[in-house]
Each structure stands twice: as structure tokens, then as C-alpha cells.
Image (cartoon, rainbow, N blue to C red; front, side, top):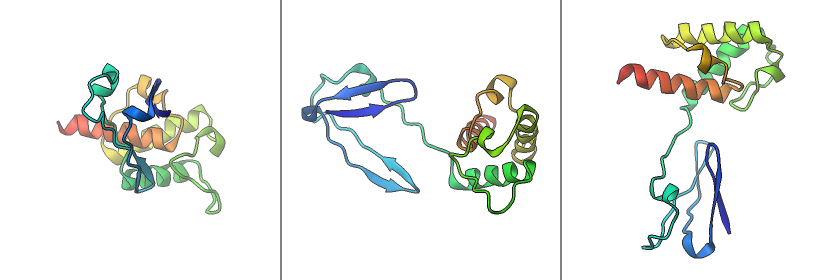
Length: 136
């Protein structure tokens, strides 16, 4: 049995219903689904929405801003998976990081959205979402 994990739930499909083709692109594991002509897949699979992670350039910019705002030494690794708290950021540091991101990318981050940011990847994903929304 294979599992596909979404943002808030995990759905299971049997081996007879799956056709998975994993590939690696820019460090992300991509999986394609096919129901092999059957219509007995759950409704959630028939209306699967794809959400892509932020571009590597965006993640790199966010890493640089975080490194600068927290005055991190060169030997400290900052990646998309880095949590602000584990890098030593307190709530004031996080506010300053968000302000730096707003200035760099020309966006405005609402307080509700800012409170959901825990990692560099979270910040990069939110930035791309806001930039896309502004340009639409």
C-alpha cells in the first residue's frame, strides 16, 4: 500500500490503484499518479492540487536575510529546513526577519501569516505566494 501525504492529511491507495513514477528535481521528490482508467479513486485524488515549493533562488535570498538579521557566523548552516528558533531567533528577531523580507521582496506580510512562519522554507513559500498574488 502506498501513502501520499498532503498538507493536512494522509490518503492511502492500494497497489492496484497506483502508478508512481518518482524523480528528483532540484532536491524535491516528484510523484505522478494514475488511476489506470479507473474512477474508484477518492474524490480528493480526482481533484489533486499541486503546490510547488519555492524556487531555490528565493530560499537562498531568505537564507541570506536570516543569516544577516541573526548575525550568524559562516560556520552556521542555514537551509530551507532551518527553524528560526533553532538558529537562536526570538520573537523580536522573527519580526525583524519578516521586515527584512518585506523590504527585500517588496511585499507586505500580514500578522496572521507571519505567525505561521517557523522555517526558512515557510518564509520562502509565503513570499512566492505573496509575490504571485501581487503580480496577478
